[in-house]
Image (cartoon, rainbow, N blue to C red; front, side, top):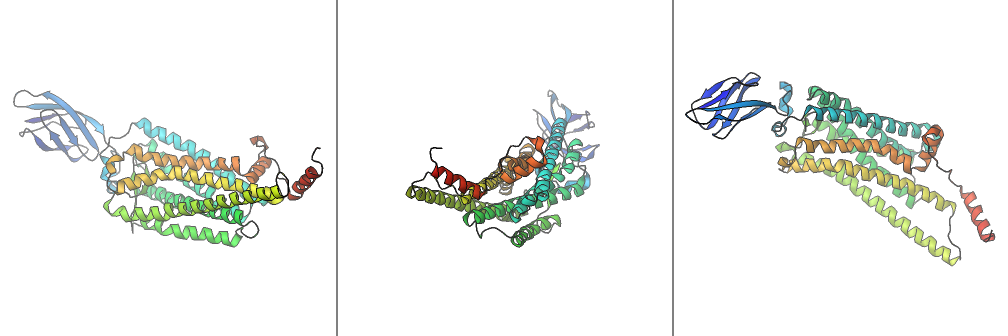
Length: 420
């Protein structure tokens, strides 16, 4: 006979069978499943698990003391449980301190990102010399990072309440904003790479016009919107909680999610990365060929170099291209883990993904949104100049760019007076 002694949420119960399964009623829910043998007993439910050790294994009765262990999702509203995949419910609930630490981390990341990206938007839109069509792509990227962090109050509130207290509405808001800003950042990085390719390889006629940039941005969001709206309205896929159930994303665990995950990855990760890689590779080839040509020409003219105004301008454009490459690298570092987690679960190895592991990609992409603004401050020459003028206390010492005429005059003087 199995006797479950009444401890924690359990009331006393017993059954005459000596091994197998026993259904036992609990105060907090209708029933739970007990697997037991002579060596131990485990109680499973959707919200509570209890493990125990034998108290008395001699004689006809087996007695067990049980203790409560909260499971992931223990405080999830009942009407919301249908959106929670059973995979997440098999794990123990994390220590409350972990929830609180994540909440504090997200508060710090949100404040840092909003200030940094807000400064980028303010500087680029508030400085006349920076309001170029090409720079509007950078503004759009900063705006995507800014909006992505505006959804974090949902996560923060859930974390400090140790569960999804924001319910379905909070999940929809969180998922919708993330679905727009993540792919939006990927496609914008691709547009920036294309702009750098056009500008550097064809500096006279290759710059994008205002109309072209507007068309590119409209195309980006027209390209993204179907992939966002289908899960939002649950036409194809849906937004569901993940990990510790305090954040939401598209469903990558259900059987019917495979084609959506593959399609989303191909359109919002693979294609942008293909464009980015191709554009920056062609930029590299062009710059290398240009440097080789200038070196040969300088040797023919018996001078050290041909540093014309065009050369100075190209150097500045290359610095801007380096900004794009750095931002793309950050995007890869931050969003690739999400793709790995989604593909791992989609193709049947969800056993490798714990709630803690699923939280790592969420933290990396938020961290990248904080780092992006500092990439501009370090590498973008005109942004640094504007920031230096608007915030002189920021300790940025960017030199004014040398004009083409000044450069040419300096070269002429050096050639006429080589020993001066």
